[in-house]
Length: 253
Image: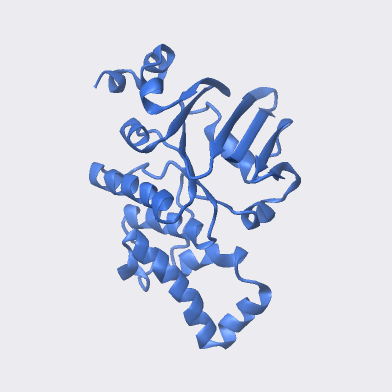
């Protein structure tokens, strides 16, 4: 059964077609990747899913609900969280408090007030965050300020903040961007663990083809807002158009 269904999604900006009747579905428990050159519509598609952009045509369903009828905070409540290409951390807050910001969809006004009045409530919320930090291997950073932390730690904090809301589907926007080979391998393992250990469906945008090919169940290739091909990694990487336009030497390696 599909978790996410995209039907004929169309998005234009001042006459420029960013998405041209794009259709695909993401199955429950799948790692599904979107690839394509800059400007192909990947981030625009993410923005449509979580309500930042309103498309001119098409439909988006998640677990049977029409997402186009919802505002961004309601979409989070429905079980979809997201990371961004550029880290969205607050430098003069601790790593723990940066991550805790992602719990807003699970903490009501009463609990927020209790947090400032009750040490017990604070400890409950922090324990939730610390579990996720431990899962990601950054538990020793909870009391360090975000300012000056290595880029890899900041990226993991971004993922942690998305996980705190307990999503059913996580949108990962270039999680390996700016990372070295070792960090990229660690990110690949984390993405697998998010699916295997946490049971979360993953929709991934990424330019690192080795990462994409190694962890994806299926891959959708976009170019100028249109789908070039969609299939399993072995099928996609041998597609002539993909080799010509996107993978080049990578496809021959």
